[in-house]
Length: 66
Image 1 (tube, rainbow, N blue to C red):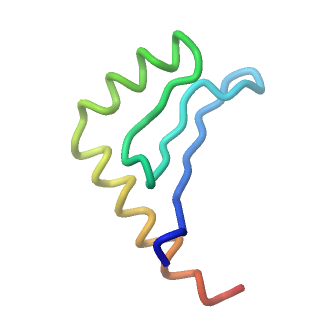
Image 2 (tube, rainbow, N blue to C red):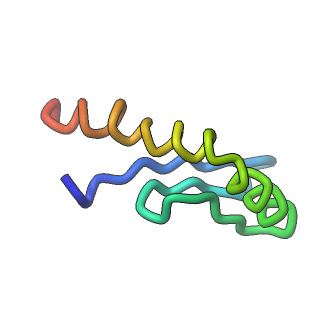
């Protein structure tokens, strides 16, 4: 169960500019715009906690389905 991860990709115009990865535990930016937003989002501890909880709520609850 440790290798299961929750990823939320944020895209604009078919290009991914930021991503939340539950293994990393924070947002990572891939463009200049994404880096600025990732820094802002990473300061919001309630957002990070909510996204980490999504791993448990979505991924771990459904692991037995497949």
